Amino acid sequence: MGYAVLHFNKAKGNEARMTAHIERTIDPKNADKSRTHLNRELIEFPEGVTNRTQAIQFRIKTAGIFRKITSDQVRVIRVNVSGSHEDMMYILAEGRIGEWCKDNLDYFKKEFGEKNIVSAVLHLDEKTPHIHIALVPIVTGKRRKAKEDAEEKDIIRLCADDVLTKTKMKGYQDSYAVAMSKYGLKRGIEGSKAKHRTAQEYYRDTFEQTQVLREEIDELQIRKEEGVEAVKQLQEKEVRGRQRLAVLQKEANEKQTEVDDKKKQLRQVKNDVVKVGFEKTAKEAGKGVLEGISSLVGSSKAKKLEAQNDVLKQEIEIVQQEKEAINKQAKKDMAEKDRLILEKDCLIATQKGKIDRLFGYIPVLSEYDFILRLCELIKIPANIVKQLFAGKEVDYSGSLYSPEHKQSFEAENVKIAIGKSAGDNKPVLALDGMEYGYWFRLQKQKFLESIGVKVNENKKQQGVRR
Image (cartoon, rainbow, N blue to C red; front, top):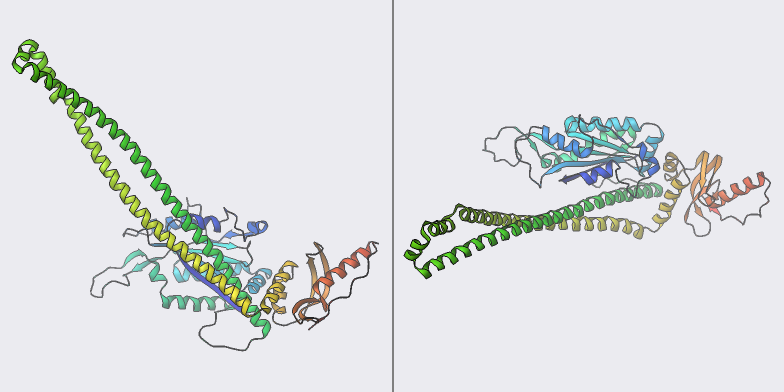
């Protein structure tokens, strides 16, 4: 019996990058493009909604939330559900993957509310079948942190902390395992309730742990890239702010030059008046000069220019304040993003370190890991692989692929087992008691002889024992 996998991750801000990964508008390195068409969205979107990101935004917008949603609030909880690799492949081979998907949706809708489950995407193009669920944490009720004597009505809120409390998280793991028990999946071991396991079972379970670690590393890498993209957007916003400030500054300078020119003309006229004498100027120039002085000193045009100058100065001050606010927020946001990126790097390094330590402490795991990947490569069915790692010898009829010869060979009642090499006692995949490579070479020889091609006799095979 394998393990049920249930992972929760909180996410803030725009989910565009994760949506692109989940909906395959970008091509992940760990996905098989030839199988991407098998993926499918399990939930129908509302009218006008075309993708996962829009579905999240639609739910928040139409939930009836009155409080302002801040930038640091969790908008969606990313949920990843799966099971041990061999068990999931067995479910797929049995044709029960649709039933497994329905049971998952039923569980999450009942546990978190149907309207809160806005997207669920089945992935069949990666190593292990799994579902990505988008859970919008809309809750109704009083705040958990509200004071006991405070009068607070039940309100609709966006609150991931209410959904993912420590007690509830444990309950989810328990109830989810119950829901998945019909598929031979159980809850991860809690506490220290140990029981005897064969070496093969121990290695199998260890491989399952390494696979979970690898999947977590992939998701951490995506979240790290989201942080890098957010920093880039903040930098672009800062550049646009600087450009806007430069345009306003240029306009203000031009207006200021115009005002200065008019003031210079005013001073020149005043100087001329003083030089010849005001009374004489009045007699000689009459009303024309007085009107000229009046038009220059108190003209509406000059006043307008001065008023415009004052407005421009205010705009410049506002833009400066806006720029300072943008720079301050950008520095704060980028510092937070840098911290999160560093945190993801540390987590990735930690997870990789766990894998390295597992293989370092138990060197034979590398041999079993090779056998596990070899079984996948030569296309041994998952249900057979599961029996092999349980220490069983299995009769198999079907097609087996040779990576050495790059072709498939038909096997009829071939006994497959994990044996020990006679030379160095290392684990090896055996077909009909032979090392797998020798078995394939023997099949190739038989094929060539069947079409009349003479081949040299094979070298002595390497011994294999059970």
